[in-house]
Image (cartoon, rainbow, N blue to C red):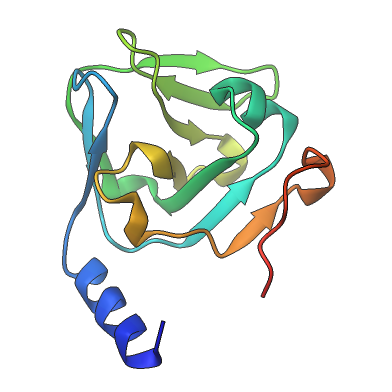
Length: 137
């Protein structure tokens, strides 16, 4: 993507609220477009929680996120983290941990426009499945 095209995408993303929700539509959310991190997580916990080879996340300030429809189920993991998912269809939605109490991670796949938030880095690459390729700079 050219620099000017990249700037247009960022300008567009910065002026719109991020929205998303689960597969069945019972749970919806909105968030600030001020995304701090866009990453693929390869940790075994995330992979197991969503049933995928990796999980793409965006990270925003917790105060700039809200559920707008429905109530997700909250599950506390053995690490003390909280994961939310739709109680009807099971879509994984968010991740929170008191080590980063001011932030919330949102699954990129649950966004209405996930193509606007491509991951820019890999986290826990040492835990990735051998056949998964990492992002190259």
